[in-house]
Length: 420
Image 1 (cartoon, rainbow, N blue to C red):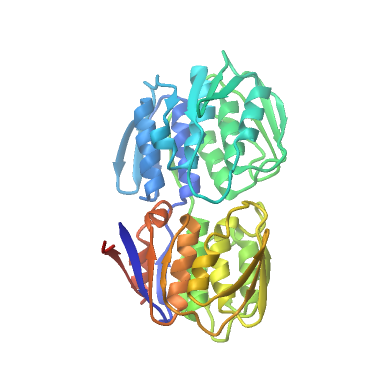
Image 2: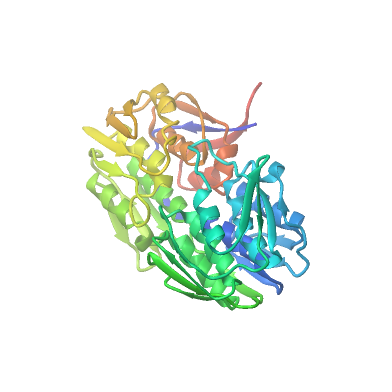
């Protein structure tokens, strides 16, 4: 397996460009299942989760062609209703096949999803919403089996603004009979991007970006072309990389409106952020980082997907910081690895109290999930000596050529093969 080797202590300088958003591309590719007609999707990141989604769609009968960051899909001949465990076990986003298959074919059989070890992340809200639209659903032998002659519009109030649940229900409602109104939904920019693509295909959707979305069902959707939005989590990771190393980095493609809460917290830590005429954000730091309190919340709050990266900054900030994780109960698995690097962190349930140290020490560490791996890379960039991050297959699920982009900024980082 691959590892990432880092010699820390080098301030980063230069320009880095953000790729397409993994969390937007996944539902957009899944939405190809809703009907025939060629769909051309540009700015698709070449990461493992998108490779897995392509394999799943091909297995279901979608014609999938990939040329660099462009994916061409034609779903006229979709007949299979089953998303099997062998694919779904590695990626939670496979659950996004459930809504499109059910509303188009009247039946779907999808394995309960896997993915990162960061909590249970139940799909109860997906199933509750589909049931309210008339689906009969049974969960047995590790599979969700759903049937409906045709879904019917309904009012659905979500108990929690689940992102994948919101996306699944939006897609299911596109071909349903009548009007569906979704309340207390997630408001993430990735959902807005999905709705923009579906609208290009002929869907009738109002309210994307608010907590209430209304979908008027249509008989069929047609093909369309779409460019995936920039990845705000990758953008945030590079902003933090510039901050933790005390560098001067311009992150092209970073949309400030997508990361407002994170920017506020980074500025509280003493980092200078400047918008660059719509081209991105310039990150500079010339003074020590300051302690800060952060709570992860649904959008537009601080993203849980940037919590591990933020904790790396807290570990070298002056004073005592507090991180509260409210989204996933198992998302502090990176803390023991930061301890190995000299971080002083005490965890009490959803709270992590971080006493900053002047400098971390390089050490061999192991990634537990996608975003934890990025947090460990950032810690390695700021550490004294050599850090080896193992299990970087987690990293490859969501970051495209991360080590190459960091190298271009002057980081001493390389991908190596693990010696067994």
